[in-house]
Every structure is written in C-alpha cells, then in structure tokens.
Amino acid sequence: MTSIGKWNTPGAITTIFSSMTPVNGAMTAYSATYDNSFNLDLYVSFEVNLLAFSPSANPFVSVYGVSSLDGVNFPAQSDVDLRLTTTAQLAIIPIGTTASTAQRVVSGPILLAPTKWQFKLDNQTGATLVANSTLKILPYNYNLNG
Image (tube, rainbow, N blue to C red):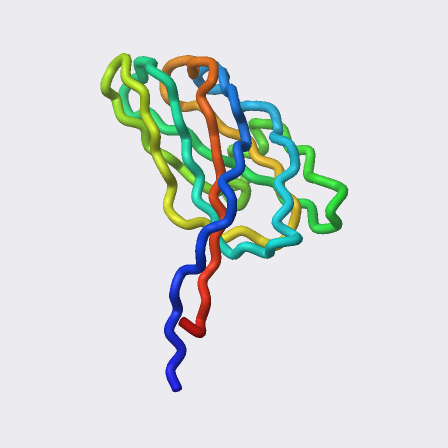
C-alpha cells in the first residue's frame, strides 16, 4: 500500500522578537531559546511583520539560527561571522519597496533540526525597523499515513 503524505495541523505560532528595531545593516541580539527538541517538528516558516517604514532598493531581511547540540552551549558567533557562515542562514525574506507601508511576509518551509535554537534577524532594508515589528515562527510536520 502506498503512503500518502499530508500536512499535520501546525503547532503554535511563537513570537521570536516582539519589538525589533535594528538599524540598516545591523542584526538583533540573539533570541531567547526556541526548543525544538521536544515536539521534534520537521519544518518551520518565519513571519516578518514590519510596521510602516520606507525601505530602499532591493530590501531584504535574513533569519540566522544557531543550534545547541547538547541543549546548553550555543555557538557564540559575531554578526560578521554569521554572515560568512551560510549554514546559519535559514531564510532570506525579500521586502517590498513601497514607501511608508506595513509589510507582513512569510518564508517558505525550512527544515529545522530537533535541537534548541537561537535566532537573529539581519536588517538589510536600507532603513531602521520601526518599534513593534515582529518575527514569529510556525512549526509543522507531515504524516505519511494520510
């Protein structure tokens, strides 16, 4: 009998950053720890909600993640080192260029290891992000038994 893969009901949306304000070219501090070692979700999507601002040409934000294999110790990479470590870059999210508008953009599915994680957001929009801009994460799985 052939197995049919279907998506399970997604997990709870978790706010990673509730008020991001990095200037252009800067990263947020590391987030609080996101624990994927319990639910063992295979995939996540990130949602960036940016309040009204005016980005420059070709704006984007990147989400970086570092994983703790032992559940306690995380890599302590600088922002420069993270940008050079492509394995830490989980998502590049393009941002629209319409001036003075709020934007909500969701990444595609990203495979996430069953460990504890910390995230950073890299602002490459050409403008400082407005207070109360957020980054959220939605975990999900699929079921091979349909």
